Image 1 (cartoon, rainbow, N blue to C red):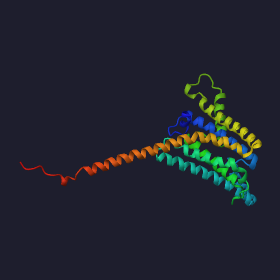
Image 2: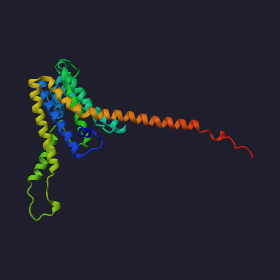
Image 3: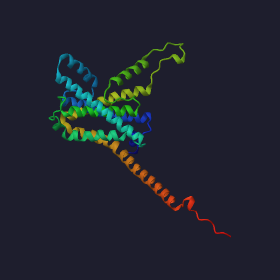
Image 4: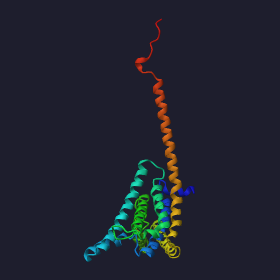
Length: 278
């Protein structure tokens, strides 16, 4: 459990970014594939929604346009909320600034798993049920979280970039270096990057299999184990930061009280009594 707390620590390492990215990729794959069975659309696929905006404008289909705009707006808002939470944690020098958005994502997934079927009937101004907007918001939140933790190197909700990078590294690995070339001109693949992008794709697919099977046989309640996983990653470090902040405030208050007492006991320079005459 102690090692899991390092996944949200402000001091990042490639290993922690990789483990957190793999877990989030599994979660995104499950939510995306399971959501497709219920909503018949992939809520993390913003490229498709952006193309849908253009198609709807040309075809003059207002409903199609509202659907795409609603999903895109929810995704962007989720990313913005994650950025606000992370930057707030950094400015307040929290030890685990990435725990808050992860905890918020788990908090959104819990009611979704319990009452997701009910939200399918809740209409919105974007001509899609609230479930679509909620899933898009969660995907934007998670994608921004993964990007902020890894400086944009890890993407968990869409696999286009990961598959591209995976293909690049495979091309480097299969490239035939002719004999006699200087060592600096040899084409060599990056093994850690190859493992990272391959692992992200595999975990996304594995999550998709689990999510599709879970939604098919169990329904929305299959989201609860995913929410519990995120909760176990985020709640302990978040409580550590809350306790540490309380202790810091108490220490600062004690220092301030001590200084205040010293100022009261020390007389002003003009009030210092003169020594008696000899």
